[in-house]
Amino acid sequence: MEGRRTYLKRTGMILLGLATVSTSANASGPRTEKISEPTMIIDVNRCMGCCSCIIACKDQNQTPKGCFNTKITKTNNGSFPHAWHSYEPTLCHQCYDAPCIAACEYNATFQLNNGIVVVDWNQCTGCGECVLACTYDARYLDSANANKVDKCDFCITRIEKGLEPACVESCPAGARIFGDLAKPQGAFSDYLNTMKEENPRVLKESWGRIFYTTARKG
Image (cartoon, rainbow, N blue to C red; front, side, top):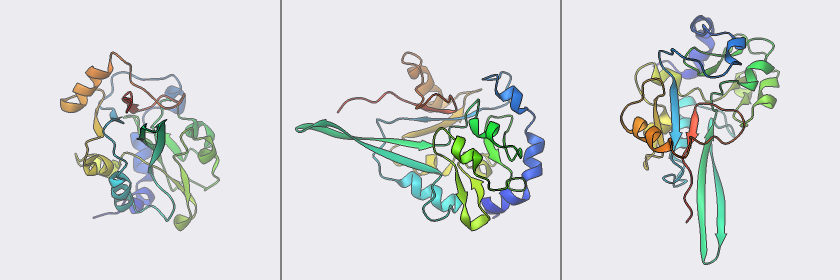
């Protein structure tokens, strides 16, 4: 089976052919008439902080030591005797108006028509400007691969085969729900309907394709 890193090196121009929407079009915000729009919902009330998603991602993408495509932030809440931990997974948000795209003068970072932000390793110089521009601290330089930039791409080699991202498949609590925002179905659709009343939550100002449920206290 072809590894993802080989895929990144070999298919840069193929990905460019799929990127039918220009960077200037991306800046205009959400687009309509999509064939698909892969999106992830994270139910923070289900996340146990077990790190199964991180381990599965590491195994799937073979990221270098100390580099992660997904992370979990642990927060201590309240005070004794009413104290509790909460966990918040983070990853690339596949932003609609992605600052990393604007920062890359070599056109190595771009957006596919389905909204996934990808990196063409044939074009990447490892300058790191996109890493600095990322709102979510989700990009890094891969020292094992000539400092090419890497990040989460929703396990694009898996979803092209009809599979879920590795982090979603591995989550024992079902805290990550993956689906098509253009054609929502099943549990993904149920979550979207439930979230309409409270509005999908994003972590920062860069609106993307990762939505969070509202955390309950305790």
